Image (tube, rainbow, N blue to C red; front, side, top):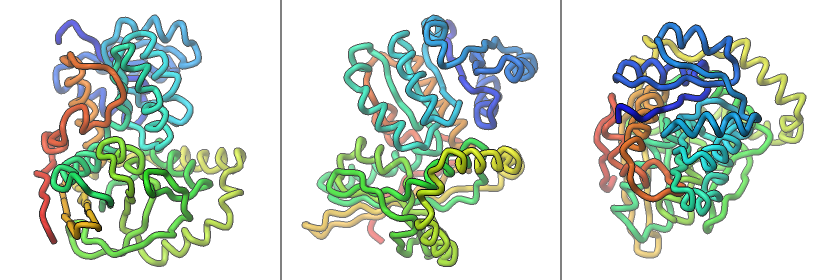
Length: 355
């Protein structure tokens, strides 16, 4: 492993920097990369790490750079714009790809590249962070309990704050709406359209369906045709979301997206280390086979979302450094097993039973 190389692309972003610092704490020496040399150099000098500035649209330069890398942890959003160029470059260079995205379209794009990745012997594993390691691993554990399941519902209750990148990703979904999977197909629904009461692990809470990544990834993991994902929300806020549906056309406009993202850059900063240490996340899932009357509930408690992303992305990267299997598209649980989440600092054991 000592001669193998990890690149962290987007290392000067909030989460990319956290991953770089933890990599050094674990004895790794990743190459820091991104679009801006000016932003890279201070962190590279502080951590005494090699750094290189390369743009994603400089495809030949990027490919040459990647040929010397074994694994890329891609941290530069918005992933809707950056993931596919990096995946394509990794396929040409023979470099394993992972990212920390929560964007459903990125998962679908990676899944569509499965055949090319197999031919190249390259692993494509987007979502090696909070989205979607905990929920994906819980989905896999629940599926093992009821392999014939027809319905899967997932959710999480977290006090974690937003990083600027995560906030910008959320803004992109405002003009689209929510999403669920029905009979194997992803369907767009209105914001706040589906609600229910869920005990995520610390008492019953009103919850709303959101367009979380597992609407795509949990299907690739389990092939369960009906999937929903929920988070707790006050009924009052859910009503506000429902009213937002009338303005989705406006929220899709490029100028509106730019304005909202500009506000994020001004006002949103990732949580401090002290704040992260105080936060936990309660992850919940329900699996059913309605035809047979079977139902089980699963839960796992993890650290806050950003610490899960830091440790999860590095755990997957180290797994890939020693990987000798086939290439292709993988969800985190398909690649590393559903026990992956249990190995992360601050995580408990997945528990599956009947409530």
